[in-house]
Length: 267
Length: 295
Image (cartoon, rainbow over all chains, first blue to last red; front, side):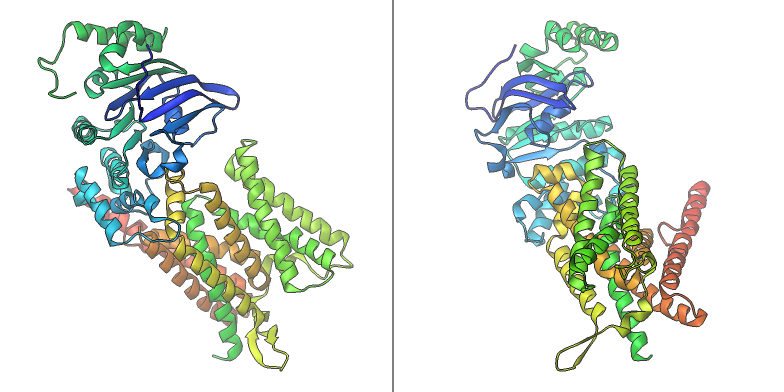
């Protein structure tokens, strides 16, 4: 079930990526619609992060190409923002929350210009959006995991892009932070942005996203949530993995007996 | 203070500032030992430059050394990335091998090369005032080394102040830097080029060991005192200058090696910061722990 869209925000064409000759992504071909909240779902080692890194040009491609807004990445870098995994950086680094948020403005500054009052302002606004304005001068090593994740998001917000690619923004955050973040992502989507999120909680995926990419080295499905989160496709994605299968059956169970009485107001 | 003492302390301070500034960025990248590697790996470059040119003219030597310095960082990166050797092992293998090559070259051509490894390793900062730069009219412009290191410091200050944001971001989050179009490879090699340049300019006067001490010691001490990178840069430069001056008088008093005394003062500074730092020190941390335990 791979649904293509007209005039896509993101087009991945016949993409193959490998690490040391071992293919990690095989022949992935997909398009994403404008103004949507997209979840990339699949088991560990399915190549979810790899897909995002390949889109951002951080890995060499064996074949295929990526176009964003109909152009190659180098021409529209300023319109695309990337949020790496939180564990990918050293949080003991001598920087404050504001310093990190300001890094989001570096792309617009060019080679020589130094960040000034305007960039500071943009960074403060971004920190306010994630509710971290009171921690602006706090050393990043003294923030909790959830707070660090929010600082990472604020850096992407300060960039003011149109397409956001986020690698596991919900990893290691508590439920309150997760709710706050998903609220923010919905606001961004409603403001016309497209947000792509690597996620691995099947249960919340259904509520959070309006477009789902199911990935397990190959692309299993890409389409609107209600058409992709089906038992058959999930089983195809998670294959014979026992633990995963039990979670899938768990999910099916919950579909028959919904734990929420009402659906969230806007999906 | 007589004029010779002034020149020695001044040279030491200039070298200290150069090394500390770069050392801060090396420590940020967890690559402190690269300074060590480069300062040893330049030896074959100097010998080769000497063998080919036949002179001890300073610019040929600098060129040969700088080429080997950059080649050394390239090899370290190559073994690490392509052969998947761990970063520290890759550093260790590369520079010992290059340094050995230099020593073999010196011993084989011992008759022709007016060089010895002691000079490279230990330098002799006390001889700085003897090598003066005299113009053709005979005007005394001060020690030659001061001009060379002063020039390098100027280049470094320009480099760091113009490209602070690139150096900062590529050290913290290379993936994000690459995503917004800042090349991590380019800034890595520019930084390593700067380290090579500094090492090469400094080793002749102060020797490789003092270069390593200055590149790691003051920044490591400054990291114990503050959490702001700009402050770390300033504090480590100051610590380096203090160590140069205090080290000189310590050596004078003991009638010993100046480079050794400077390194000893750097060690002492680190020890003091380790115990007494208001934020990261042994005492303050214990105080915080007991306060938390009581609460």
